[in-house]
Image (cartoon, rainbow, N blue to C red; front, side):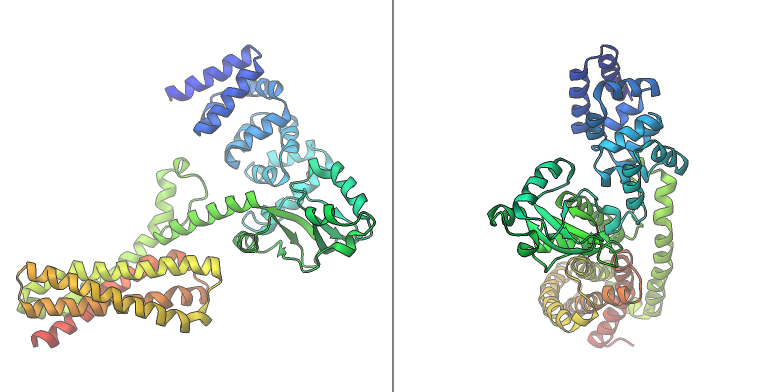
Length: 451
């Protein structure tokens, strides 16, 4: 808190002295240190308005773009509708829409009313799509030209439109109704004869994405095709906006974060971790934890079923944690790899004939290594060669079983409409705990002649 107050004091001093240069320098330093939001939170609404007057809308919008959308929204709420509208108009439309979505509905409405009608309509069109869709991520700041315009006219138009566009490396070609006809790269424009038309040099085989598609599909398309921007269209092929490479970096970071949280058996957080309350964290985790607790109870049932075998050869109990832990870990390795591959490579049930042999061969090698390690461990504990062989064979079988199940489980869950990232890793560990014990004690019965 003392540090936050110190940063706020620096800002207040610069505001009081009307020192724009010092104010801007301090703000960018705080942004680099990740402390900008906390420092701005310490300013009063009046001080914030003075800060906005000193910086100007363009600079303030650039600085607020460094914050998370909810943090930027908190600042705008304390500025007032008119000033907030000016700042949002200076922002990139997709960033402005993200910030506006974090505001209370009544505040957002007031700001939209205060904005220029054209700017307000742009933001409303972006807000009409879910935030995790291609439409929610796109920006309407693109360059579109008629197919009849000449190359020299197109280049002249670009000089005028470049500042307002997100990127000018691609020029999109549309008809009078906004339908996407083709795309022309800046390179092709520059190298083409000036008297040729854009329609004559455009590329008609266009990589595009529907506005309703998931943002991860858009990111995957743009990355796999090596594009700088990806056009977003509606169901009638009308060009609505574009998604650019910097958007993809944000999308992939968000999606990877969500996948990692889900793989641990927790629902993803909708806000930064440091802002999450214990109650929110409890809500995100308790459901799956209780479900896995109930599922894990059958492990105790299995142990009770094989109680006589344990009583006959007490040494068998020494290796229970080792065996079920190894099986769970082997399965988790597979599901983690597969869940990510499903997201990036569109792997589905049709690919099982290719996945199973690959993973089974891997499991044979992994199981052999783990069997040798388990045999060596059992020999060190001096439990007898037969018990050591029992443990080695059992761990080999458990690894094979765990990997085989883990190769199929995420694909089946996806087909059933269940998010495999949430269920796969915790579930495979729980499943292998019980079934691994069945394999272990079945091998023990055969190897040790137990009744």
